[in-house]
Image 1 (cartoon, rainbow, N blue to C red):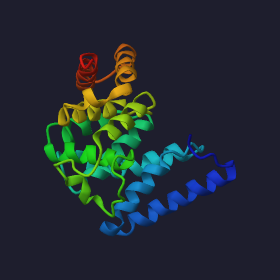
Image 2: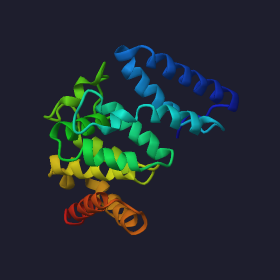
Image 3: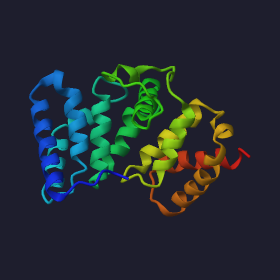
Image 4: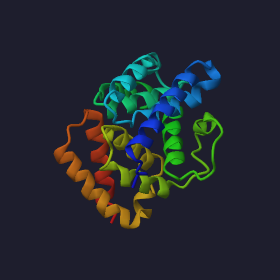
Length: 220
């Protein structure tokens, strides 16, 4: 469950996030990390003018979405694309997966490392983005990450394509995971069937989610 704030407190909270986002943008490179995180969180605001402000602010950073593969702005592009997808514009995320994630080993590792931090598989706080470039995928527990991705798959607000690709990449990196999944396997197998039957995916996402289903369907 997310924290529940009174309407006034919620308004103050998101106003502060907007101010932080704009102040961080004026700091240049030193404010990149704070700007990215504050803007991403601000995109959850459901106030009457929030979507317009967030979309306008995100679209000002669309230049980072044009980059291919790994770059110092990769994490910002990922956050921008996922926030736009949640606001109802899925195409930037689909483009990001195709151009700046798939088939790039450093970017694929960065995506899994990023998920590991956010979903609690990497328990040590990170002061900057350097941890994302660990292509050995060390320092975090793959089963914990699988559990987090499986839990969020059916709740993914507009970016189920990123979940599908990330699950596929995780199983590709750790083929033994299907055998170690334990009680996760059944619900995940059932959830992939429901999604494949009822959600409009890109061709890549459908192919990758079908692979996830196949792996768990043949792991027992």
